[in-house]
Length: 283
Image (cartoon, helix red, strand yellow):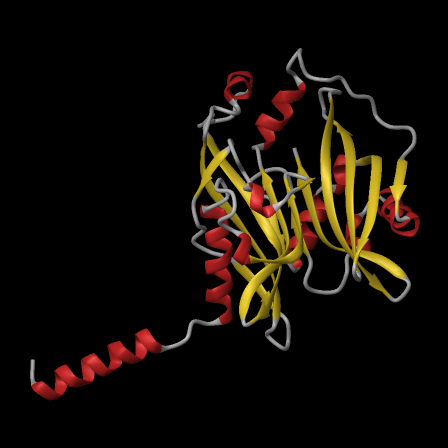
């Protein structure tokens, strides 16, 4: 190679190394780091804002305790969906982190189901939430949720040791009354898409492939209408200008088995009306 060609090649390489990563790339790194270190206590502190809202499989969690302790070794995802705010100082994100469970968490369910290639140790977590920029990118809202295939989820209802549920006849409401009442209204209407906030919206079902943002999220949510989801309970609270909801729903399968799921919802106000920004179903 001629000297001038070598010089140009080195210059291009140096510029490539020095070029700042895009906000989307930086956010992908933060989310990937959290997934890869979800087993480890204390490691993730610098990736979260003080007082961040964090849910692991529908339950409030503390970052410094570790997020999936004793459950799963996850890998950083190859792709993270990012919706940047106009000022590029905050964003919503969504992805799926896959790995191996530290124990065969669904061995019995694999045995009961006819699902192809059921791997008792493979596990996937939906990871979605909100991140803000203040010198560095830090997560201020995270829903990290273990998933199961629909076959495995329904197989759990066939387990003779599993709780037997009945479809609810009333909804228990606790916490912020206005928000709780709004959530009851969303489900009573039978179509959650009517209660969606403006873009972006994020949705995740209980199966690994059930995750989408924007128009895809609305399509995914619309597909659940046929399940006739019925609320069992709603616990609503306020975190700044956001509404935070933990709910329980049930639906009946074709076999007349009643399945119960948890739901985590992040809501925002549109004028005087509460609407959902993020909805996450939990097995």
